[in-house]
Image (spheres, rainbow, N blue to C red):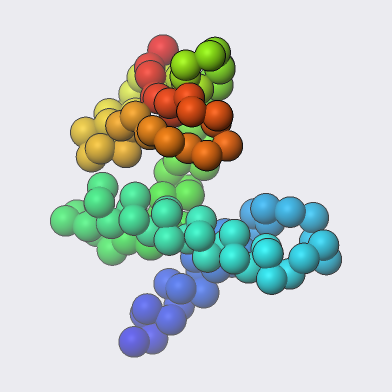
Length: 117
């Protein structure tokens, strides 16, 4: 259990403290909720990609994908996120993380899609 507690602490340090989503002191409850949501998403990515090869945690996905560049463009039908080709792109694509997302409320009916290039 000690290892799990240490891993959780390391993850929270990386996501909740070192990478704040909003300005400090603005709304601590909102910041904590965003940190938990980000941790859940990053933990899911780490689990799907690396669970068979190593111990996984949210901070592992953050470390490996945190500097992944992308270009976002929007038109009347799509919001497109263009990611560079490489191992990280293929890992995400091959595990279903780059599938089109429909009905995103704040995109006014446009589809979120991922592309390479």
